[in-house]
Image 1 (cartoon, rainbow, N blue to C red):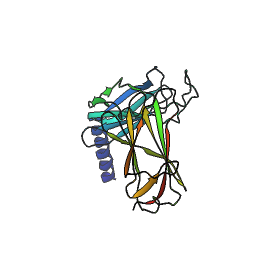
Image 2 (image 1 turned 135 degrees about the horizontal axis):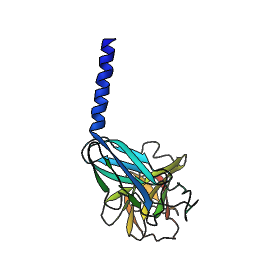
Image 3 (image 1 turned 90 degrees about the horizontal axis):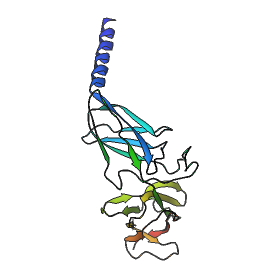
Length: 232
């Protein structure tokens, strides 16, 4: 019994020490119009190696990250475009927001032990979603014959990969939210696989670029490619 009590005491002291060496981060997620955003994923990544923290904003756009070890963090926010805002001028409308760290400098915050860094607010920017459909009726990707890399390159020359939005027996659909009114390139690299455009015309090179410039009100760009086999 004495050993058990000692073990409990050690655990309690360790928990107390951790609480005293930790702090917190709080703030509000909104967009350019001041609309509060519910369901936003708030990700705090430590500048030095450590544990990444995540929270989801509530109906008032508020988020809270508790028990954050002291140190410097980068705050990134992602809003799934399937989220419907419950109130306000955009109620029941699907709106796309770009990742807050993809196209601009991330929000930075310093966490001090025993304190909460408050008002770490992030304003999200609306954008468009580029869709790419990879038709693979021969199941070349599933069979391990190769992969197709698809990404967007902006003014910073940084390559942003598209994410798999859905996958089925005949291929995959990739998506990425991009900001309005910025000239970009969509780069498609078939590697060992031969690609053709929607009309069946074979792409002449391993890597092909397509210009993208989206304005508000325009239909989201959608490009379709067919995997026809392995490259000669």
